[in-house]
Image (cartoon, rainbow, N blue to C red; front, side, top):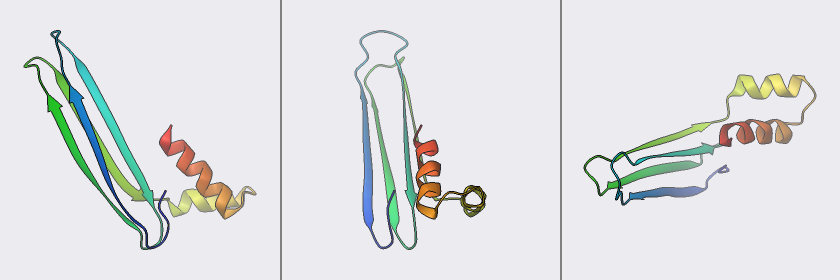
Length: 91
C-alpha cells in the first residue's frame, strides 16, 4: 500500500518458455493507494511457444470508504480497518 505523495512504478515480467504443448500462466498485480499517492502498472507478457497461453491482470485503486466505515463501526481503528481490507485484497 502506498501512502500520501509516494510514487512507485510497478513492473511485472512474465516469461514462459514452454517446451510442452498447453503451457498456461497467469499473473495478478494489485496496488492500493491513499491520499495523493499514485502508481502505474506496466504489464509485460512473453510467450515462447505457439500453443502456450499467459494472461496478466493489473488493478490500481483506493480503499473503499464504505468498507472502511463498516469495519470502524464494528470497533476497528482506521489503521486496523485498512490493514484488514488490504490483507483481503492481497489474498
